[in-house]
Image (cartoon, rainbow, N blue to C red; front, side, top):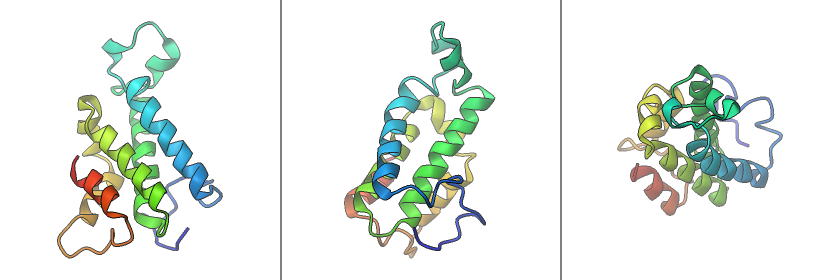
Length: 141
C-alpha cells in the first residue's frame, strides 16, 4: 500500500491496509459478480427476497453499497502500484458497474468515480503504474 492520500483518509475501510493484494483482488472479483447480479438491482426486479431487496440500487443501503464498491475499486486502481492483477480486477468492477443502467446514474454522484475519471485526464500520470489492459477497460466504460 502506498502513502497516497485518498480523499484525506483511507476510504477502503479499516482493513484497507491489512488486506493483501490477493485478498483484495478476490473481494473485488466477488463484488463484480454479486453486486450487479443479486444486489444493486432496481427494487421492482427483486423477487421476494427481503435481504436482497435491502441492497436494491434505488435504496439507501444500495447507494452505500455502490459507494463502497467504487471506493474500493478506485483505491486499488489508483493507489496500489505494482499490483497488475489487482488493478485489472478493479477496472473490471468499475466497468461492470458503469454498464448497469441502474448503477450508472449513481456513479456520477460518487467522489471516487470522479477521481477515476480525473486520472484519465490528458497529462495525468495517475494511471502510469496501471497495466494497459486495465486502462483500456476503464476507458471502455
